[in-house]
Length: 100
Image (cartoon, rainbow, N blue to C red; front, side, top):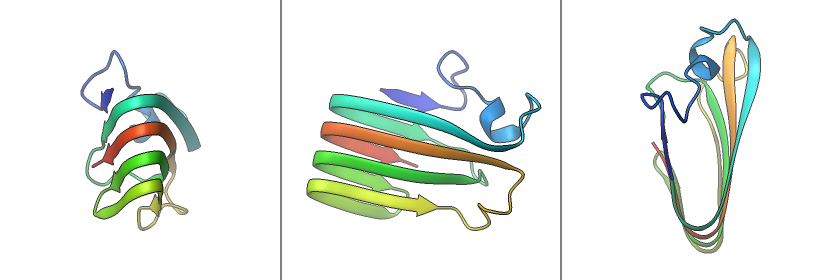
């Protein structure tokens, strides 16, 4: 699964930009069982990410965790004060999670 802001069929660009009039924190939840989940985010986006792989690899920007129960929790600087925030919760049983 690949999610990117340029793929309007799978991703709501308004969650990050506020183009749709929403303010505050919005949530995106991605769950997988087997394989790779990749999320590409634009530079400067205010995001808070909780990513967990039961068996495999989790990489959120420059933070890497490998092995059993690989979890990364990350928030961009200034997240709490941003007017448009996106909270992303990602879970995968076996495989890889990449957020960049």
